[in-house]
Amino acid sequence: MTDKTTTAKAHTNIAFIKYWGKKDKTLNLPTTSSLSLTLNEFYTETMVTAGTEDTLLINNMMQDPTRIHNFLDFLREEIEDFGPLTVVSKNTVPTAAGLASSASSFAALTAAVARHQNWDLSLTDLSRLARRGSGSATRSFFPGFAVWHEGTDNQSSFAEALPATDLPIALVVCEITGTVKKVSSSDGMMRAMTSPKYSEWVEKSHAQFTAMQEAIANQNLQKIGELAEENALAMHELNITATDRRFTYFNQMTLDVLAFVKELRSEGFLAYATIDAGPNVKIITSQDQAETIKDKLQEKFRKLCLQIATPGPGISFED
Ligand code: PMV
Image (cartoon, rainbow, N blue to C red):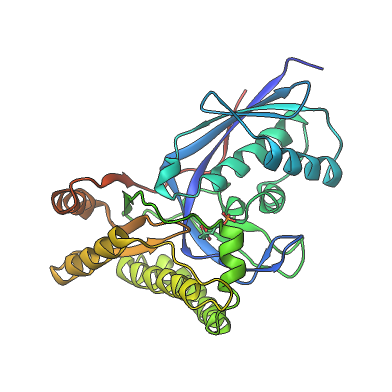
């Protein structure tokens, strides 16, 4: 056992074209390619060091290590065996905000272990490995916009960064807490795939994935927003039309904020919504409109917890 510690920092990402379904559960291959924006304001910093058994601490609290233990065992088998690890994470992703904390967590963990074990792996290799922990983690190694190619096997399902852009994009993150029973993303996807609209969504998503890359290359913020909102709302429609235990992540506040986003648009603001596996709404806008939109939302919904997020960096190390 050595005293060596390795720390990696990964920022979370929000998908503008969503991953919502698996075509291979073991390899965690998605039914569609997805595209996301890495966020500057929310990240996970993970430190690994040799220990006596796999343990996990998040923000100084001991956690059930089962999920990361299984993931570490996967790495032990896939790459090379190593001893038990103590994993200490600091998470700035508000867990109640419905932001993908599993994205930054599994990206940071994968990177920290690889560095700790001196594995010579590219970011693409790391993204393939992190995919097995959490699909959205695949995209969290890269700055700004990233795409996760669905692929047809382990090798071809990986993420990469899109060319850098100085697009002045911002997200207004609306933290809505609710009493809605949480359905895990894996369970949610399984149910969504039973919707009669599922194959139509997949087909549409393929076209939107291409159109979104074009809109980003053209710095067309409005088109980016339109496509993201359309893709996200259609994803949530799958949940309510599922034939196996249909459900929704939305609550009344989600619907109220969505209606307000429409209102903002009719007033001439650039504002489009995207929603993940929870009730919270992220409003896509421009950096110069974000503060005003945040103020307007706060005035209308006093209890809403709001934060502005901007494009963030890729993975980094500290040792
Ligand atoms: O990474 P997972 O398995 O928690 O799934 C994430 C699913 C969404 O956040 C809803 C969409 C996405 O592409 O991130």
